[in-house]
Amino acid sequence: MAAEEAGVVIAGGGPAGLMLAAELMLGGTEPVVLERLPEISEIPKGNGLVGQIVPVLDYRGLLDPIRAEATFAGPIPAFSFGPLRLDFSGLGAVGASPLHIAAIPQRRLERLLGERLAELGGSIRRGHELTALVPDEDGVTLEVRGPDGEYSLRAGYLVGCDGAHSPVRKQAGIGFPGITSSEVSRIGRLFLPTAVIAPGGAAVEVPGAGRLTLSGVVRTPGGAYSIMPLALLDKNAPPGLFIVFTSEEDPTATTAGDGPMTLDELRASFRRVLGADVEMTEPQWLTRTIGNSRQAERYRVGRVLLAGDAAHIFGAGGSLNVGLLDAVNLGWKLAAQVAGQAPDGLLDSYHAERYLAGRRALLQTRAQKALGAADEGTAAIRELFGELLRYPEALRHLGEAIQGSDVRYPLPGAGAGLHRLAGYLAPDLRVEASDGRPTRVAELLRPARGVLLDLTPDAAVAGQAAGWADRITVLAARALSTPAVADALLIRPDGYVAWAAEPGGPEPARGLEEALRTWFGGPEPTAPSRGT
Ligand SMILES: Cc1cc2nc3c(=O)[nH]c(=O)nc-3n(C[C@H](O)[C@H](O)[C@H](O)COP(=O)(O)OP(=O)(O)OC[C@H]3O[C@@H](n4cnc5c(N)ncnc54)[C@H](O)[C@@H]3O)c2cc1C
Image (cartoon, protein in one colour):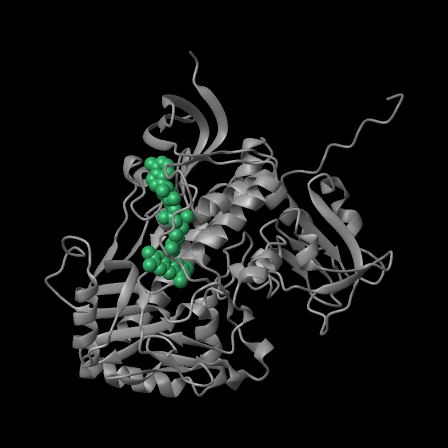
């Protein structure tokens, strides 16, 4: 019997796989999503989204449902950079914070992404494990073990969204170089029956340990710890339930150690790090890990691609941000490729852009980790680094590094002539369409089509894009947001600016056609007129 065929198979239905599947559906390609787990994992993983993905989810209409379940969503007034506190109030109003978060437990996020996929007509094959793959020039042959037995699949493209241990990455022979930390981390979700949250919610009083801050990881001579009432992250969490984290140097550790972690082990670690014995009961989940910081050498090898943790892991948070942004970057490109509409090089730009973003995330997370080291030299660097944060530009710089908004995609034609927004996420400009309807960039991008926004007074640019109207939304409008940032913008389906015209420039459409061809291919051939 001939193997079932699919344009795209996604291995892994975690956050990256689900997001990619939804993006492909928006692009007109229905993928087969294989997920070996029969249900969404109940293991408490990510506590929320931090970074550029938060506005990008708004650009897909997904932020409102997330906000309905999150304890907080929006620009955050303060955050931590390793052991340092970033107080963005130094930048002015809260809205000036460069860092966005959405505090939602990962399993809820996965449920919402699964619902979005279903609304778009897609589905996920739960309980189906990819067991083998053989790539060739035209596609990939896959072996799958499902609930009813084994079967074969033939995929045009295979995307490994199958997590840090990615069987796809390994079987495709893609290297995963990086560093393994010499610190052992222990995490527990448990009750602290004697802890009382101090008025204002910034600290917790723990008999025997005193007043412990709730703002991020705290360094001690013995290591580092953090303590967080789950109610800050999960609206439905019962009072008294906490996430407790410790980290201790152990240069001999090359693995996370043997056997499952116990409550006694976590309590002993907390005692060593904090010097206090704290009562802990009713553990819901306990784990022990060694921090890894790695990146795949290639995000694409022929017909095999990687996204999410399969492509990168970071020692200090931010993985969901980078992984979901991978998916948004890849979805429209792969859909165009499968539909035969992708211009040359479009799919390869996925590696060029997202590898760069991954490198930047490695840099800032490794710096966060390094700043926490216990030696005196690092203490001096930490103190001096902390002094630099009194300068608004330094504060903003670090906020943007965590956000990932400092990553400028390397666009063709990059150089002096490029508009300052080109290569960055488009700002959520408010505009009034020529029919008087107010809208904003976030709403225009919801169908995941490219957008040409013509803000010139006489709609001088829109006509130039008429040949691409089958692939992009062309809108002549009046800018409501001030100050004017551009006379026209070409925004890719992933929300990034491909081209923009300076306000008041003499030739507002200059460079537009080249950008349209680069990202969307040639114009639609004009239909021959009758009688010719
Ligand atoms: C304790 C903890 C706390 C964390 N906190 C945060 C946080 O606050 N913020 C943050 O950004 N990140 C956090 N992370 C990291 C975050 O959970 C990961 O970055 C995220 O899960 C990665 O998503 P993914 O879709 O790339 O991979 P995964 O979530 O690992 O999903 C991969 C999926 O692939 C499936 N799979 C694997 N192999 C196969 C196969 N052969 N066939 C079919 N399916 C397969 C797996 O079952 C899994 O469902 C945390 C992680 C942990 C463990």
